[in-house]
Image 1 (cartoon, rainbow, N blue to C red):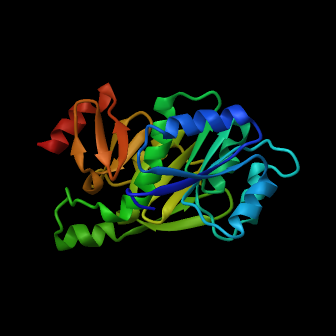
Image 2 (cartoon, rainbow, N blue to C red; image 1 turned 30 degrees about the vertical axis):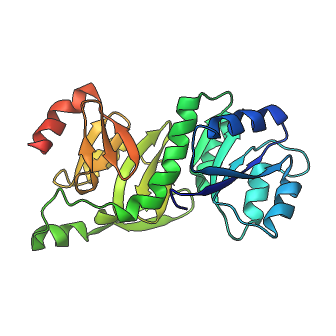
Image 3 (cartoon, helix red, strand yellow; image 1 turned 120 degrees about the horizontal axis):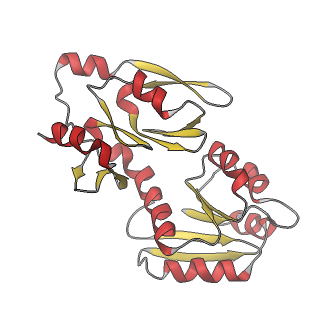
Length: 242
């Protein structure tokens, strides 16, 4: 996916959902709508001979659910789920969807989801070493830890972690190769991760210091992801900047 031309399709059995997403995307000049599908079978037929960068996917559709359809794909584009059903969020993240939008959603929330797509594609391209590259630091950052997902333990190098986001009863760990869904609490990550390389900047976010691109009064940037700064953590962040 690139910034010049992002092709997308909308898969939803409700025409009004198509209209809303299409209208929102008119504000994004690099987005190109290539297909409307009103059920999963139509989408399968289109994808048999075409490819897209991004799908806006509903869950509750006739004949075949959105998630069952997603499981049939061998080559998966980026996926933003659009649904009225909050209870399927964890399953969505286990299927590595980029974001989960609950209907009705605002343009601001929609834009945040779209920005995540960009972030996931540029994480590996935007490393700015705020932590010095001394031999000791390089050795420490190469240390690997295990993160428990629902079905497996993932071994991850510290330097491959970009940030961690708390989402209700689970966390999303954003890494070089994607993200991991875990039921480990963010407070436990704060205890386990070395403070030399990681810092908590919000009640819902821990970030890797050497992945921070820039900092403003209310947020910081990692790749193209915008991370809010909590009032409680501003002093720690200012010490890091100095």
